[in-house]
Amino acid sequence: MFRKILIANRGEIALRVIRACADMDIRSVAVHSTADTDSLHVRFADEAVCIGSPLPAKSYLNIPAIISAAEVTDAEAIHPGYGFLSENAHFAEVCESCNVAFIGPSPDAIRMMGDKIEAKRLMRKIGVPVIPGSEGPVVDEKEAVKIARSIGYPVIIKAAGGGGGRGMRIAHTDVSLSSAFLTASAEAEAAFGNPEVYIEKYFSEPRHVEIQMLGDKHGQVVHLNERDCTIQRRHQKLVEESPSPVLTPAIRKEMGEAAVRIGKAVKYTNAGTIEFLVDRDGKFYFMEMNTRLQVEHGVTETVLGIDLVREQLLIAAGEHMSLPAEPLGIRGAAIECRVNAEDPLHNFAPCPGRIQALHLPGGPGVRVDTHIYDGYMVPPYYDSLLAKVVTFGHERNEAIARMYRALGEFVIEGIKTNIPFMREVVNSETFRRGVYSTRFLEHFRLTEV
Image 1 (cartoon, one colour):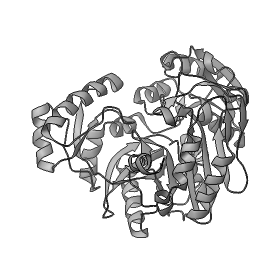
Image 2: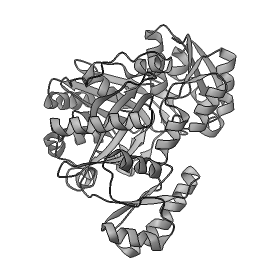
Image 3: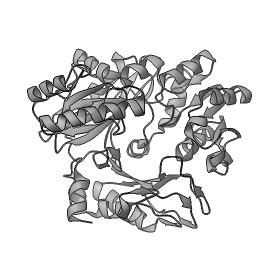
Image 4: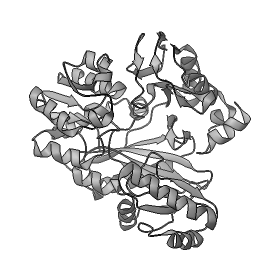
């Protein structure tokens, strides 16, 4: 096992990895920008290295600075967290060339699954259902219209080399498709340096359900059941839960087996997530694979009683994962709500600033992953995520009740947050009945806020 690990990230995920290292008697190294000097991940790591100025390109995306930090501290491995360099194949290659273990999949797996078009081609080859659409990048508007007419409107245009909602547009007619194609392509090039886009059939009321999987270097690949991530804003997840209210045991088994098949096909090692779209009839389709630890990994940990970060470290060190080959049974239900520094009453505008008072929720079945504290200055340079609240119940209604209580106890003064909004979401009749779709917030804003 490693003796020292560097965490190439910030905020709550850096703190999460530091805690896992401490539990395993591994020394941790934090890297930070000048804006994060007073962050908790810097305080609680065994060592800390400043790697640059606040802008991510000068710090958390600065590969030479991160590698230098690993070398001067004698770190044997780097955990990338999520975001930043976590799905950067070049970074994984640089780590390998510098004899520093990358705690994640191989560069080839990252590159293969990061190309959405190539990933879909692989799915067709191994018999995993994919959403109807183009089989490769769409060359121009004329080809886009031809494909859209063949699969039927509405359609969605997606960036081939990215995600997170960027380079993504929905079109309902030939006219809107032409405009959407140009906009999506330009946005994809600006965000990912790759203007290629592809087209898929757009389902108006689907569920977004993902399967957590793990693979080790000894050929074992397991799936860890599902997380329902359907409630989103601008394609960014806000609420996640497990088990999904809409999956039957048969569909869960079929999706899990598909995830394992994918993992074996790409010789996948470490943690990964297969994202599926589920239509009204319960049919599922592959969307993409995230080749990293997910923000919402705590939901899976809660319902299965496991530590995913610990498994990541074991796998990266060449050891066998500690989980059995057969699927683990879900115990109870878990829900996660993301708490962000943003103002829901003003189009969710980011709200950086100093936290003047803080009270974290607690009690039975409540977990809070956060890096904030009383007096913490929320910087304007990074994602607005402040905390993740995960609640557990023996059944879904108990988990919902605990989430409603926990959000009511969560006090952050000095900046605007989405806590009141999230509390209304989990208390809505639609959410409590579990019959929502990815368009939930459209209807919610119109009828319940």
